[in-house]
Image 1 (cartoon, rainbow, N blue to C red):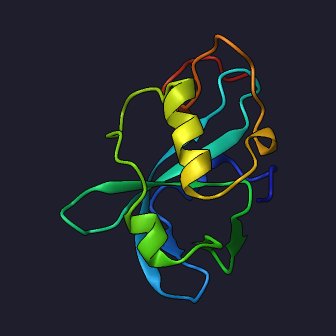
Image 2 (cartoon, rainbow, N blue to C red):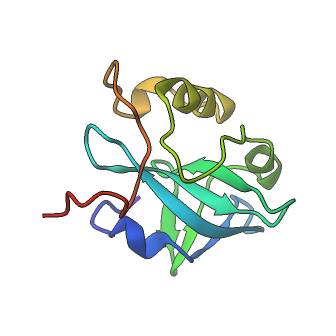
Image 3 (cartoon, helix red, strand yellow):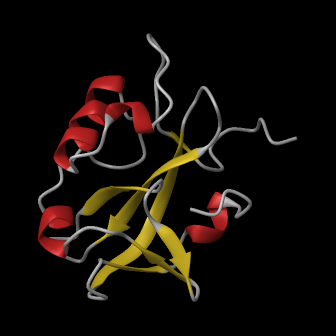
Length: 125
């Protein structure tokens, strides 16, 4: 993922799986509380109007759309934690396991909450 992209600019972009099949639209972006790095995107799938969390690290922005390197089925089956709240370290770990990602890929700081919503804090400099 291109880190110079403002995570708020991802909201509303279309998201596609690794085969180019449309997943949905980026609904929210979650930042790591410790680093401020965009870590997860909640994709509004349209499947029962739920959001599916996808990792941003192996994903990339291609021609104005988010390309997620996983199958739509795997994304659809991701744990549903609801949106608008922090992801706990345990929830984040479940997501890493669901996608078969090495937990060390993401920054891990013990005893910290992860997944602050982009734009929800006023700590912009």
